Length: 632
Image (cartoon, rainbow, N blue to C red; front, side, top):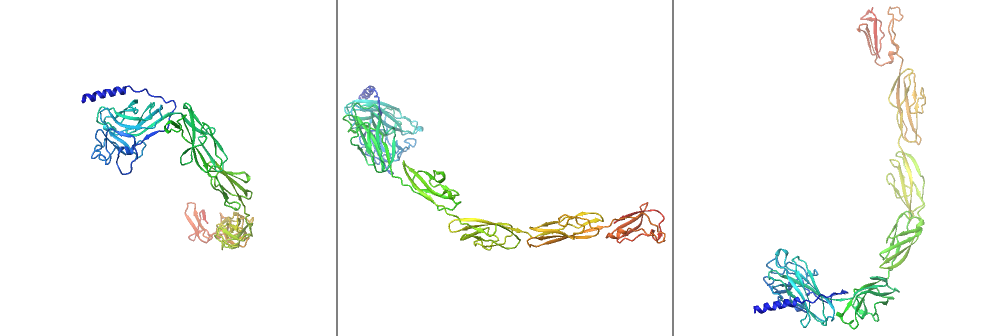
């Protein structure tokens, strides 16, 4: 028996060696005619079966483990099962059977998980019927190595083999080693099915060990080689957009490469339910009447096949669709936030649309949906028109901006000067309501004629409204502070000298002067020059021209006589020049006078009111010359 198996094994390899030469597609491989996805799972179950229920046409020569699956371990060699992930419950070896979604990334999508063996035999078949004979086909399959790179186990390796119902081989191809990189890998084989409309894919183990060789299969597809079809609208549009109530027609055409021999064509339309043939549109180019079509999405595609095969699903080529969208008729609107007062801001408002173009008086334009016009004036009144666009549809609407006339107001005064703490009445006329600001110092800011008594100079503004627009006016109230005077500090001069008085005044609207005016060069100056011959008091007076409080201040000017000190006298008792006297000393308050001899010895002293010296010292005549020192 062992010898027989070994002989069959070499016979099998000999058959594989006679592989049919790969077929070359001169057109393009179209959409899958057959797609085996192994079905869909759910959010709760881990194992699924039977296989024919989830994957019609598929058959495995391994031992298929259906629900409830394998326990306590995953799978043993030569076993298989339908799962959502290789990391099935009960797997005692986490380094093997790594978690992974199906080829499309669907967490509930199923795959066929297989624990391969070393025997080079068929372990899986997928039968495919109703194919068009004499067609170049591409069969592809996605394979995932279920182990992690850390497992360092034998990579799976398999042969894709195609046979017809008579078990004649149509082609074979090895996958080579499928790497343990946690990535799905696609393998394919191109072949010609000859006269057979049924083919079977066989997968054959090509790994020399049972260690490792764990993998999953997914998404087995068959595609037919046919012409390359690229449909378009009119010149070369892949899509069109128009509005309801349109009156347009359009032309369908297609770029076709490597067409069938003796080809025939059929255009189809899909309005959302299913693809249907368009009657009479059986040429490569077709004109479509699209008058007044309802809103919605319309798709078009071209089918081509060899004459006689157009109705055979697996014997024809179908293009990708091109799309025409009929959009609802756009009905936009226009409005504004007016009527508006001069100087205010106005907002224009548009309805439906995705892009907008406004035009208006004085060359106004805007691309905003709801633009704001700042500081509107009378010349901006008029009609504003917006053109809105959406999905190729346009609509126009207009709105009229009306300007209101502001109130015309007047005030009783423009400016006034008043004394501090004095009231004045403000008055505005020409409107129905008033508001004065600032409110400080006003008896009532919301009447036409408030009493104002501000503490500092203030500009009062009144906003007047006649029921529609408001306007403003202003009155300036200047506050005159009470006058103040400073005549300066008292002064001292000697007879015959002059002095400048240092007068200072403050306050508004005042007149000032000095009294008396005697001996002043100009009594109306703040700093007149004074030359009095004797002591005098000058008074600086400031008088408000508006009747505000007046003020005054004095300055005393002390005038000293000229001091003459005699250098001789004759104290001989003849009644003539018997005493030494300084007449001007009496003008000083506390003069100090000392007389010393030539040696600096004090011989006479007078403190306070001066007493003339009779030339004696201690009642005796002084015989020697003296030096007189006076301190005044």
